[in-house]
Image (tube, rainbow, N blue to C red):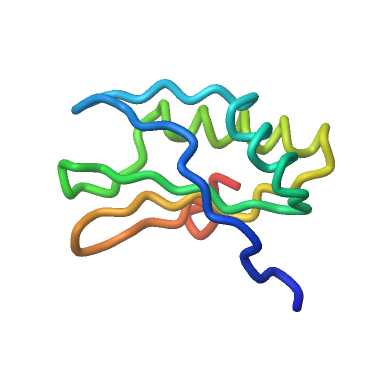
Length: 93
């Protein structure tokens, strides 16, 4: 079936208030999983799902890397305890 998850992986665990994610780490997992597309997500422990500038920048870098490699970034979700935000729905993708 189209767009069904074939793998779920933890790519990176950050500190209390920061996480540095490099596209090569994400793309390595996508390649090893034979992915044609991917959805990435991370949490905001503050319970405020508003994307930071770093969230937007990492989304753009992942999208660009995926375009080069033929792996579509379908969405980037920011998850909180009571809510979430889709960067695609917000127009960042």
